[in-house]
Amino acid sequence: MTVSIIIPACDAEATLPRAVISLMQQTESDWNAIIVSDDKRDYAAFLASKGLSDTRLAFASTGLYRSGCHNARNVGFDLVTGDYVTQLDADDTFTADRLATLKPLAARYGGAADNLMMIDEETEDVIGTVLDETSEIQRLTLLDFMTLNAPLVPLIRRDHCLHRVPGVEFSEDVIANIQLIDRIGLLPVTPSSSYIYRINMKSMANKEGAVEKFERGYSDYIDRLETGDGFGLKTDNRRIACDGLIAKRALNRDYAEALERKPSLTFSEFAQRRSN
Image 1 (cartoon, helix red, strand yellow):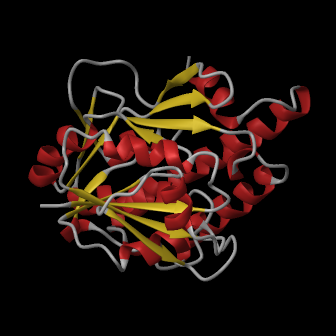
Image 2 (tube, helix red, strand yellow):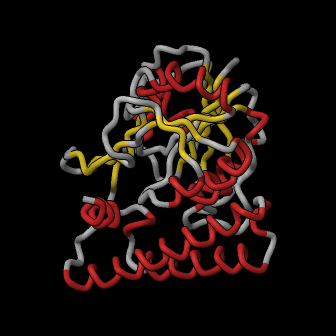
Image 3 (cartoon, one colour):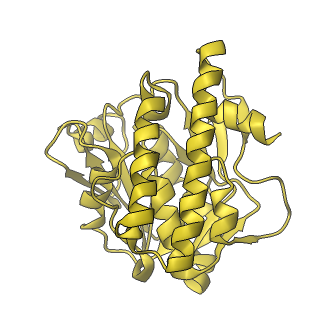
């Protein structure tokens, strides 16, 4: 019943120890983590130097430098041994009850997520959560998901896991979420925020030129849904996903205009303000 957690790591020395400590603090102890170096660094030796050694930690490498999280996740997926799979970015953290809370739901429904919380890395201020506050588990349709301004990080029963789609780097989590909901029908999301997503201005989504790259990415995915393989989605879900990505592309274009007025604005802050 082990949960396998895939952690891509690239220039991650400053934050990886914090992510690993959040795993070691889990109330559910039956897990293993696969830390995949995407910068040719020896993260096993690095963590050991910080006093962080654990038999549940495994290490792998893409053998490349900055080949992308999607590639590193696929390298990690090939080494998964658990019955459940999830991901943790090297600069993010889990709350202590995350695995214990999500595993029963994933066992029943095929996958489960939480109301992901976004935090400013520098100030520790809470930017917001993906869903509005609620006391009940919500089961999202694909249409529900496409209205969100950030992806979710589900714990997935292994029989519903897929490798990340080759060539899909930008918004790869969105495509993965879409494919999961297409397979399981409804995605349960807990009211608790057990994945802490830390917004860093140096991240891909906030780097100079990111708006243009997301524009190209969205346009490519829309074309693929309209005239290509559709990422293997059912016919009705192809249309829902396509319409949702068209809306996200429009939001990205609005963000580009907002950046001209306030260059320091992050996309998460922009999206949160739009939703309020």
